[in-house]
Image (tube, rainbow, N blue to C red; front, side):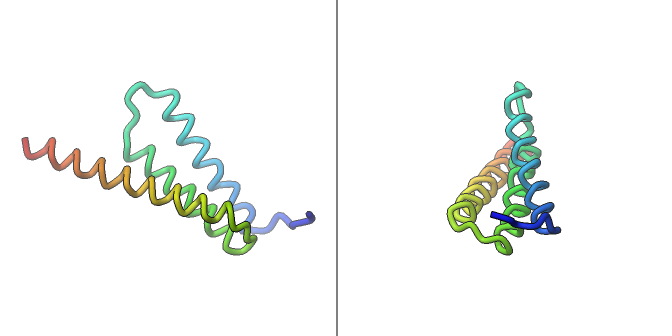
Length: 88
């Protein structure tokens, strides 16, 4: 495989860094902020999706779709928890 390192590859690397950073954050923090965790995961999935739409790898593209869906679910859950806490 001889894929050039173009802007879409760089975007993909930034997305990968976001997902790795989110996992490291989850591992290091005792009480991670869900907005930071899921927001960073969603950003990473979005950036990787941009890269994968140009340099198509279908299994990875499907994985990023699920990764983004889980991150969105986590963000919605965190918003609901914040709203519930504010109303008490």
